[in-house]
Length: 116
Image (tube, one colour):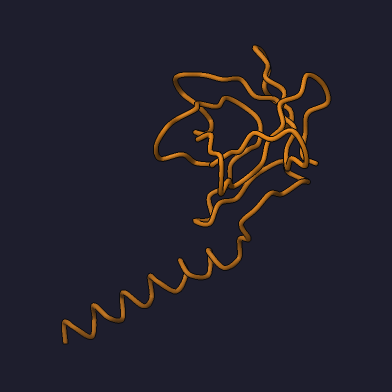
């Protein structure tokens, strides 16, 4: 009897979790300037960013051509799409710089940042 109860509870709890993951598509949402990873977590493509070596939220490759996002590094007010302030504490998102297999490709620009 206990085994049936445990199996029933597991199925009841697992079905909503599977439904949530299938509803969210991984990738960049240009309209909202966000990136959704494979786990269904969504991150803004602006704000305070910390560069890390391990356990990133997003893996980024810096490129010169065909970027997904053009990023402007700012000191104040990183509140618009593509504007990023580099910080060491309390980041909005943690980023790892990689040379291959990135989640998104980024080009550093001086003007007109945003999703392309």
